[in-house]
Image 1 (tube, rainbow, N blue to C red):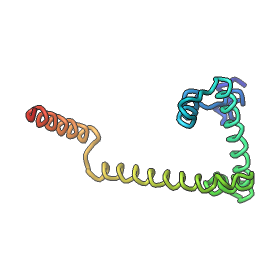
Image 2 (cartoon, rainbow, N blue to C red; image 1 turned 45 degrees about the horizontal axis):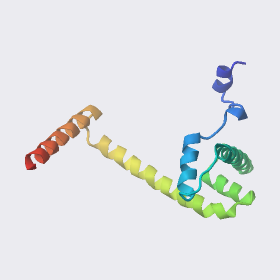
Image 3 (cartoon, helix red, strand yellow; image 1 turned 180 degrees about the vertical axis):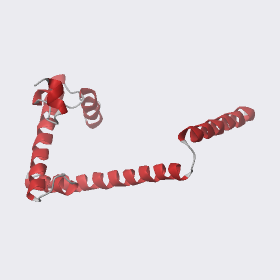
Length: 145
C-alpha cells in the first residue's frame, strides 16, 4: 500500500511523522522562560517529543473512555475523564476554562455568520459596501489633515 493509499484509508501517519511545529514550540518556550534564560534546540526537540507522547497517551485514554461509554465520537467529557484517569486532575479546571472560551468563540462566529446571511446580500455586495465605507472614511481622514 502506498503512502497516498495509506492516508486515504483514514489510517494515522507513522509515529515518526507526527510532531508539533518547532517554531510555535520555540515561541511558547520563549514566552514562558525568563528573558535571560535560553533553551537549546535539543531541549526544544525533547519537549516536542514529550508533548507528542502526552497527546498520544491522552487521546488513547480518551478513546478508551469513549468506547466504554458506547460512543463513537470522543467528546470533551471523555478527555476530561481521561485526564483524571491518567492522574492529571490539576489540568481539568484549565481544560474546562479553555473549552468554555472555545464554545463562546464558536457561538460568536456563528452569530457573525448568521448576521451576514440575514442581511440578504451576497458576499461580493457586502465586500463592495465595505470598500465604499473604507473609501469614505479615508476621504474624511484626509480632509481633516
